[in-house]
Length: 115
Length: 118
Image: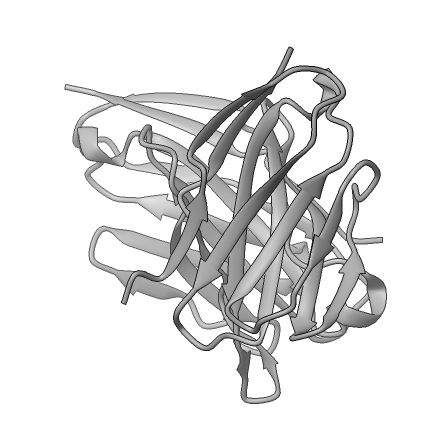
């Protein structure tokens, strides 16, 4: 099992450019999440999905869009990148566990710099 | 509102010392889950423990132990006989059972950076 993988690992964008981050999991998890990690801020939830075809906003959704067309993939899009979106992005997945929430498994992260 | 506070930003210890990382949480949910994650210098997030709000038993796993006290809303993490490989950022996190209604998932604290020197 590869677990949770993220593509790309690093990326530098210019202000206004767009890009898509890809997250893939091979654990058949229902739930998937996108977080961003900024220095001194911990991780903050951007968007999440509780199943194929469903997405919802998290704590800091502005400037991002997501799609979950396949159960194993969760895409995070930046339509017009801004320097404030310079961050490390983590994808995670989890499964329902006895009707509740299981632990989240995280990908290795994507380091994005917007100049 | 849900909140996790890790008041210790950085801790430095010498190898073999015991160290406790503090975590205080706030939630109105009666059922919730608490987690600890480790982020070593390589950057990945490693799951350490998951605890639900109905289970207040302390847990020990090798050199790691966790003390959950609902009365003080704390879920502290102790490393016994610390080692250099324990150097990392440690995050405490909270999740309410109804996260998909509240629009949030894991609420993370800001992390505690632990440095263990030899």
